[in-house]
Amino acid sequence: MNTIGRKFRVSIFGESHGELIGVVLDGVPAGLELSEQDFEQDILRRKSGARGTTPRIESDLPMIVSGVFEGHTTGAPLTITFKNTNTHSSDYELFAAMPRPGHADLTAALKWDDCQDPRGGGHFSGRLTLPIVAAGVVAKKMLADATMLDDTPVTAVQARIVELGGIASCCHSEVGEGTSDGKILHCVQNDNGTAVNNEKWQAAIDQAIKEGDSLGAIIECTVPDIDPGYGEPFWDSVESLVAHAVFAIPGVRGIEFGDGFQAARMKGSEHNDPIGEDGRPVKNGAGGANGGITNGAPLTFRVAFKPTSSIRKAQQTFNFMTGEMDTLEVPGRHDVCFALRAPVVVEAMTAIVLADLVSIR
Image 1 (cartoon, rainbow, N blue to C red):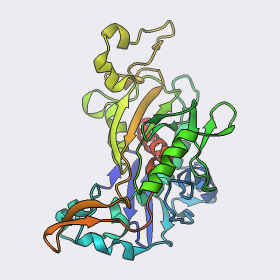
Image 2: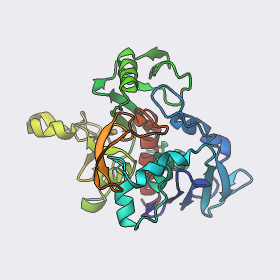
Image 3: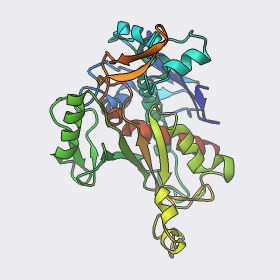
Image 4: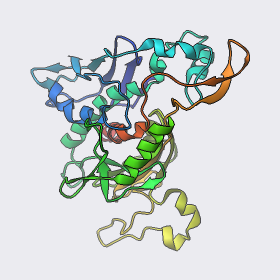
């Protein structure tokens, strides 16, 4: 369905080319300081306009329509909406006869007997990650307001691209999501914020643009400081809950924690995490959890994003109107690599899960 969470419940609504999209948050504690300006930074990180992202530019201005009074949350359901203003719906008329490969055009039509909104991908669109980012802003505030066993606040959730188009990052850095110069793709150094150009990534993006094709990427996410004890065995393991939320992001194809799939190629002596004198692991092959429960090490995982499905390059696919195979060249405005804007979305999903765990602990 469209809701996740037990005590902190997040429900998204809307379609890519509908009047508006939004999110309803239930279980937000009263008294959190919150205004529209609080969403600006994370929304900018998701915003399009940089080289390799969609030319569709929206204002993305959040409107808090319930749950806040005089700058503080009230404890009532919090509703945030965003208007859609820059839409080219005619670009999608072709897909009724020729559903796009890799998209939900066909599955949505089959599930809902052609009653779905197909414009811009409708409810399946990456546009719906905007209200998820907004929910993440609130979740991060909840985490900052919470305290762990040692009375220190939960630290920030941090996500960055570590591989793009099969090319590993040039440095220990994160992509400068939200840039709008349209010329270069930046790596932003974690230590001092110095911007540098990852020339190999930029060249790969330029080549994909030239060929009318697209690229995928891998995003790494870390919660550097989280107490032991979050999560449950089996069905509600912390890895299961995070994976559930992360796989809801359009285009995600895989997730691995710690050593991940590499663990299958290791020996136990290599993968195991010895426990130090402070009671916490001295390495992190498990990615921060044992038995589904956080173990005190940083919660660390990587997410694989597929290349964007909508590409200009010609593809052979079935034409339901003619009953024959046909050539499809997808019109419209699409990201060459939508993962460029996804680190903040991965952060949001992670924060949503952790805020729910903090609420029910």
